Image (tube, rainbow, N blue to C red; front, side):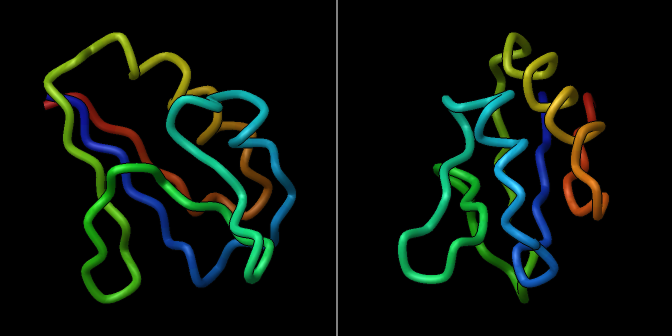
Length: 76
C-alpha cells in the first residue's frame, strides 16, 4: 500500500508536483494550489491510499522536489 499525503493549505503553487506526477496532482484554477487527485480531506491533510505500488516513484520524486515539503509518501 502506498500512502500519499498533501498539506494543501501550505501549498505555494510552484507546480513541481504536477510536472513530476501529473497523473496524481493538478493545480486548482480557483486558488492556484496543488490538488491531490482521488484524495480524502481530513482537517487539511489530503490523503490518497493506493494498492498500486507503481505510483510510489513519481509521487516520491514530487515530494522531494516540493520546496515547502508538504507532500509525504510512504509504503506500508
